[in-house]
Length: 287
Ligand code: NDP
Image 1 (cartoon, helix red, strand yellow):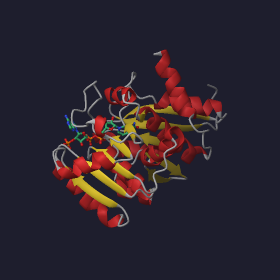
Image 2: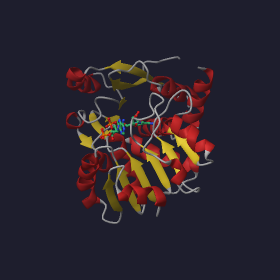
Image 3: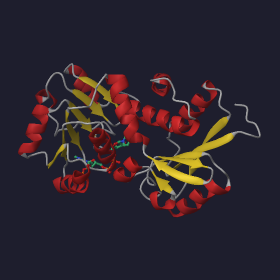
Image 4: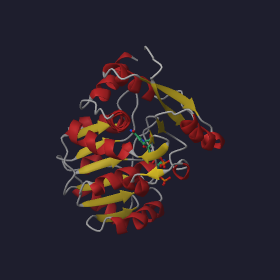
C-alpha cells in the first residue's frame, strides 16, 4: 500500500481487537477504489476512551469504527449523533467532519441493506420476530421500524429486558405493533406462527450452541431466517434452516454491509452491492 503526505487515516476502537476483520476489509476497499487512505486497528482500553476520542481531533484522524465495549460509552464524547443512532443508543462509526465528530450506527443501515441485497427481502408491511433484547436487537428493531414493518415481537430469556426495550421505543413508532415476550409465553407462539422474518440477536450459537428455544419447524416456509452471529463455518441455526429449506443468511452479510456503509460515510463512495461480503467469503474460504 502506497501512502502519501495527503493520506487519510481511519481506524477501529475496541477491546479486544485482534480478531477484527474490518482492517482487512476496509484496506481492501481503499485499494480497490484507489483512495489514498489507510485503516488501522487501535486497541483502546475503556479507561482510555476519552483520550482516544480526543486524539481523533488532535491527529486529524478522518473516522473510526467503534466496537465492543465502547459503542454506548462513546456517545457523550462526540459532538453530534445522527437521529436514528440516538434512538439506537449505540455508535459504531464516527466521521470527523473538520474537527466535528459525528456518530452513526451503520449496523442498523447495513442490516436493512443486506436484507434487501442478499435476500431480496422488502421489510415494509412484514411481521418480524427478534430473539434477544440486547444492543444488537435494539439496532435491528429501530432499523426495521424505520423501514416500515407491520409488527415486531421481541422474545428474550429474561422477558423484563424485552419489556423495558419496547417501553423505551414504543412512543417513537406508533405505526408499528410492538410486543415483548418470554419463550414460554403465548405471544412468542404467535410470533413464531406469523413471522416473515426471524432474527437471532442473542449470543447463542457463537460457540456452536443450538437455539433450543427456536422450533424452526414451526416457522412458515416463506419466512427468512437471519442469524446475526458470524463464524468461519455455518452456524448451527443456518445449518438447520438449510436442512428445512428456509431462506437464511448469517452475520457475515451484516458485518460486510455495516462496513460498506461506514466506507460510504467516510469517502462518499458506496461500494458495489456485495463488495465487502464477497471479500469476506473469499477470506473465510481460504482460512
Ligand atoms: P448482549 O450481550 O447485549 O445481549 C445478548 C442477548 O443474548 C441477550 O438477549 C441475552 O438474553 C441472550 N442470551 C445470552 N445467552 C443466552 C442463553 N443461553 N439463552 C437465551 N438467550 C441468551 O449482546 P448484543 O446484543 O450486543 O449481541 C448479540 C449477538 O449479536 C452477539 O453474538 C454478536 O456477535 C451479534 N452481533 C453481530 C453483528 C454483525 O455485524 N453481524 C453486529 C452486532 C452484534 P438475556 O437478556 O436474557 O440475558
